[in-house]
Amino acid sequence: MSEREAFGPNLRRMRIQKGVSLQHIANETNISEVLWSAMERNDFSRWPNGIFARAYIRDYAKMIGADPDATVDEFCRWFPQGDRRLNRTIEEHAEIVNHKPDLKDDLPEGVSEDRRGAPDRDDQPAVDVDHAAHADRSGVFDRLRRAFSRA
Image 1 (tube, rainbow, N blue to C red):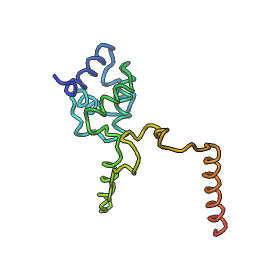
Image 2: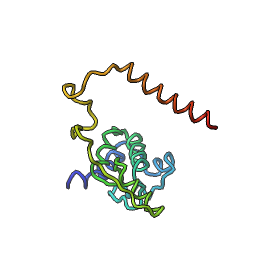
Image 3: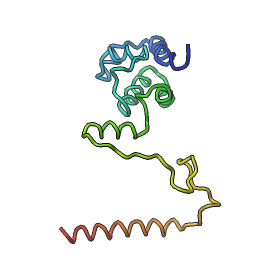
Image 4: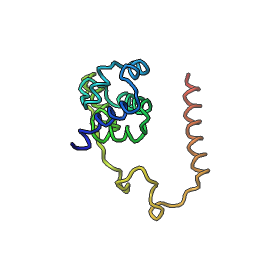
């Protein structure tokens, strides 16, 4: 059995070992036993996507004593319902209003593949953080002042 196939059954095994019933989880979360039972079989066909699916998995993990963060990460790795990327959500919303979005996930010039990290110190000039923050704030206040003067 692959790790993906073992996701739901492993959670079910942990739940049974802790003595927690599906009915108890359903009552506490206001989510039907049918959905929880399906989750334990890796059947996510009737599940919501995105943040709601992740929140359901997090609640379930807390109730059975599993690590919620690790469980959610594993769920996101194996099942598209937990996808944390925004493109699919934007495309689904655009489809509702009959709009064709022009989404690109291109990296700006000079940005490395890892967008989470700080820029390389060798490539970037030193910036006075307080001065930069003040400049950003003053620009915001200028825009607000202009907007209110027109009102």
